[in-house]
Length: 282
Image 1 (cartoon, rainbow, N blue to C red):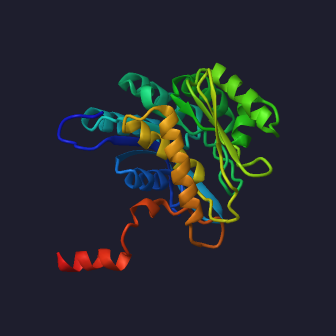
Image 2: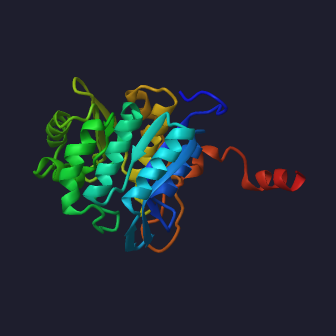
């Protein structure tokens, strides 16, 4: 855990910015806050998006991405790290290089963001190979959903048995642990954690809600927050799963499409009116 003047763990997110606030950097920082972890960020792309979809993507120059990582690492350090939207091979290569340089792979959570909730493609074809070569082997935890796992293994996945086979394949690509997210399969979702030896199942009841924007970002950020606190991968995934389930169940309509989950639900221990009264009294 980071020592010095900081008295709490530090987690770093390396991802794209979501102008709608429900996914990407914004979701990650909200999640870190919910776990009581100090959040730092490296922005890899600026997106114009809302709950209805992605309108435009502007990539940050790779030199600036590398400089952001160096700036955080030199001063703050990072007890946990996650990557999200890395839209090109060049971005993946510079991020991987700086992660290796600063020795951040011990607690690295890689969310292989390829497709937005709206269906918009966020990862170019040339970047898939770069992801497999440069970033997957660095991952302490890789968190693909079913469509992303299908791209990684090159075959369709329709059952829990398929997910187990895919987890073994992806683990063989170098990731030290794999969380297969089963939400895209029929029936109640079951996530699987494979550590190279054992599988751990995380079943849940499917919640009928359109407010699921940013769930993948939130899940991986929660795992990174747990790792930054010194938790084992199993404990971090277990707590992240429980946090995400609560955030989905408590989500309220926001926007006209796929609204975000309620990231701050763990912080709402007193009525907002009471919190505002404290501010008025200060």
